[in-house]
Image: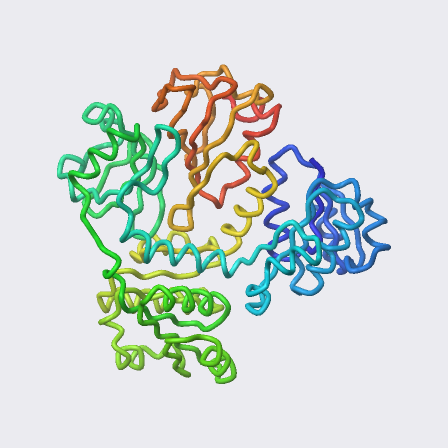
Length: 455
């Protein structure tokens, strides 16, 4: 598949690096010649220097030969124009990165009039994940993922004392029809191996045959209601704070947004209904205390600075807030985050890249998908005869520790995989993986991937 990335910013480069593990012919275009030269020296890709708004540049790279075009410069207008021109000149699918909230109110009109296949908004994706975590987790009664006969539910380990301090490799002895696919521990998603031990405060993601799993979950799950999330404080009134505040207020929660830029506060006040907007420095902890931080059901820090977000998250946790969420862009904070006990940490690049890769793969391979706390993704993949991972025992595959084969559906048969099981053409494979390692999934799709992943 031929893919063109128009705009070599953070998102464009992240998508490119992920695609390198797949079976793709990648081209990157940017107006910055120095940036393009660095990319051409570091990666095995085609690079071009030019203004993507011009038909001349698009024709020079033979835009009509591309299967997928992603326009992801820092300008919404440039992205929309470039995506429209690319589609008009013959590319099969064009997608534009769009961030302006004003555009979000007219997405259908933009796609229709400019003949763009889709738009993607990193801030809207993040706000959607936070909303799902805060609101929908209180409403889930029948699992967070269901397909055919397979389902996934989340349960608190403390609700079943048999689970506490049990090694993962003993789970199948006590619960032969269940698989612990993931663990949420201190705000970090863990893909467990056989030697991991379940702790009292862990949140477990269990996979199994639907009827048996729901029967088990019904006995032990704590019943929660929508009313559990009533008051939310958001520090950072940027696009993510705006989208999240809007959704939560429409849901019925009391929302308080703290933003230090006075002009931005005026915009928020004019465009958000039933949301309290305070013009103040969110890092002023005494001010947060005066604003009843300790009485909030949830606290969300989405400023433009990772350090501020971490500091604020720690303060919220120390004040007893049940759900604390932060936006963190740099992976270098991973180990620190694990020790802080933050409930949910989101990386905008990872979430956006995962969404773009789903667009590229389409519904032929990816049958269904669900995100877990913005860090891991559960995919149902169709296995075809061209994938060389077929007919090979799973134990002979060098599966990395950030992924797990959770279930196999073969006709009417449901299989919780063991080492000797093999994948066959026509199977539906349910796989859980950390989205920061999305390239591994692309490698699975390659017809020659077996050369890379077999021991």
